[in-house]
Image (cartoon, rainbow, N blue to C red; front, side):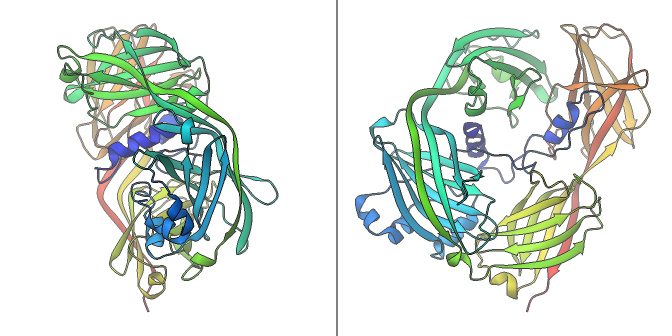
Length: 549
């Protein structure tokens, strides 16, 4: 998944905020009998072991001779665009200089600088592939650390090729922190894969509403199916399902549909795409929404684009590091708050604030498990300086949520002297549906519509048969309505849920949802709303955390 996240990140750099797939909607929709999966949106959902790709600069013999200057003279800005607290620490001359290297078969791994505090451990590294390099991207079978007992420490990484300097430059980040002030760890990576762009032309017809299947049978990809759905606002949804002959491709390749205009230029999606969601049989599912007239235009061609392995460098590159918190100790502190958040359900309170020179974390605790904090945007006001942040749900911590803020333009001591407040904006609430059925009659291949209401919100339903499956779409003209999360019908007393045929965006302007009931053979059906969301974009919560001195 590393290539997916990096490429999406590049697309979002110009946007003030980046919408993420509503995985709460997706995962809660994938139900077997009465099973519900507790999850959240992708931006904060149980932090997954992400692998990203980012940016790089290199190192010369002269700079190696002066490691402090080397560490501070790299241009890490693009790599650390989402880790501004590390940039802030670098600019203050903080961080532990490491400058240790290991070379194997002409490939050199160097760890330059470490940042270890009470919030995270962060390593800046470079990888010089020497003559082994092929392609402009690289991935590893594994990258991570081990503690002094040999226990694995997982995390996420990001890197990208720098053409001018001829090296990859990256970071490895983990929530693991040392119990004491120092720690001996091993940092290593296994088996390097160099990749480039693979392409496979497909004879997709956007005017054909039926499922179209294409055989690829190369580079670890087996086959794919592609469906088109007309959407409101002149858009078209393309839903693809990929199968792999190499199962590892599912985790390490960014596979997507590319539409090319008559000038052989890529046509940009009209909305943020969703890539790589899991299918029931292990398929790699994606949805991409284009302007219908752009992909139906004369001369448009389609191709499957993916990451193709061009070469490998096998082996393990390992370094033993003696990490120390010394460089980041000044200004770091923890403060117990225990401030109730009555506006948030589940008996939620702000339990603790952890401040370091690179990051501020607020630890929220909940009496009820898997409590969802119902806001989209978070800031920390430190004496008038605003730090932007986000929400994180930690795996194995069902009664705890974290708000994380990169330390930008401030030092940690600022939070001891100035007033600090939490600001949360754009409230999104989730509600259970009612017991009023939506009656679908005369079900056929023809698109039919009807309008109902729930809690005063109008909902337009469109339903139709397509290849023996019943599709049910919902859309509201009221922008305060967030969308239907799922529908179901009653089979006796049991609920039979529709499967999501379209992944929504939590907090997005588009509140459209689509469920599919497979192998349907009736002409009438009563369906019910399982749950839905609402928006209050003007709702702003401000909670004073501490007074200034």
